[in-house]
Length: 219
Image 1 (cartoon, rainbow, N blue to C red):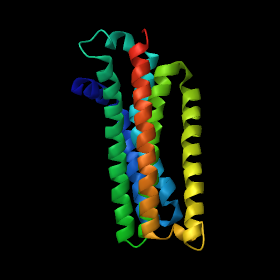
Image 2: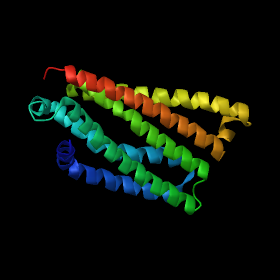
Image 3: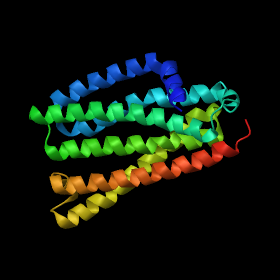
């Protein structure tokens, strides 16, 4: 499986470097500007970081690489695991860059701790939820990649907005309002922890669904 991950890396290394440079520039902007935009900027950093992995998925599927891959001395499970492995590596790099920017912004006095927790939680959780691209691509095919991205994007936004709506209603019953609740570190820590757990469960379910589909597909 290590060889499969390295293969994905070498196939996307130039694009990955460009994406990471953009991510670092956004991180600098976030660290020095701060404010309520930190959540969106953190998400952009992670989205750029994972683009190498998602680009590779589309390129492999479009080139029908799987027809060759299944003849290699590796199992279909290892192929799927290598996809998820490379994606998670790039995602964690993006999350790491994000965390550095958030900590720097906090130390510079541009970001409150509650904002740091919220931005980190959102970027990490949505990064996990975007792994749904894999089971959808295995099921539908790369020729419908634009449709897949739209569908997954809608699903991810739906999960985020529903969770955000419910959690802030609960926060409003504890504090003066949902907005006021977001300014409390304890509340944001619990809220984002729950969101990460939900995202992990959804991502894990997507992995097993995708693995089952990939095993059954006749390439």
